[in-house]
Length: 249
Image 1 (cartoon, rainbow, N blue to C red):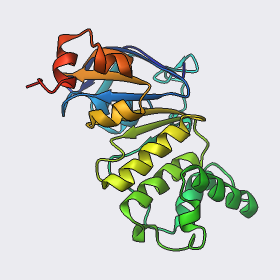
Image 2: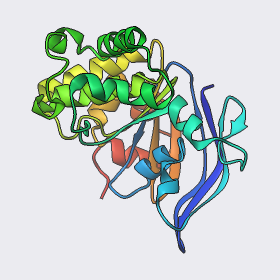
Image 3: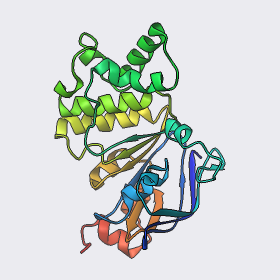
Image 4: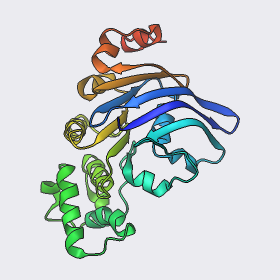
């Protein structure tokens, strides 16, 4: 198990956004979170590397265990958590710098200065993100000039550059066209051979295509969780059944 969410509740000020979530995240598998807008999917995802800490008034009870350690314990290094558990956001957000500098930014912060080592990280990260062949001749060009799909793969490469073992993806294809979406889905499947992937998606077909496990969320609660085939074909919860069959209102 890569991550184990245990009895997790979260508040933004007085408003409770998550209610007693329990969910195991299997290592080297893709876990999808589905559910209607505003149900807590992205909030839950961000608890897994403490991104919600950046929002004033956030309070968490329960645990998110990573390698058996609760990442919310007071002695935990948050920067180390975020190095090990990377985040890919809904819209591509490359830094306004060159392709090369986007990849080397994180390693440099972590103390890597050797040019040869940095060059290796750039090539390795871009190859893992299936982007190397597209950009290897223009590494010093401006990242913002890339297509949307290329920018999202660059953001994935940037996350990989600091050698995480978990990747959190918050609707990574929602801003992309179908061709770019297909490439990101294929990439996620390939990455799951070496990384653990947790993905929020509004696209149920996407979850069916690529996820090993799926959790259905509603009103801040994890209503049902299990193997993707079962969730979609033999859901135990009536709310889940209504949602995956399109009868949800």
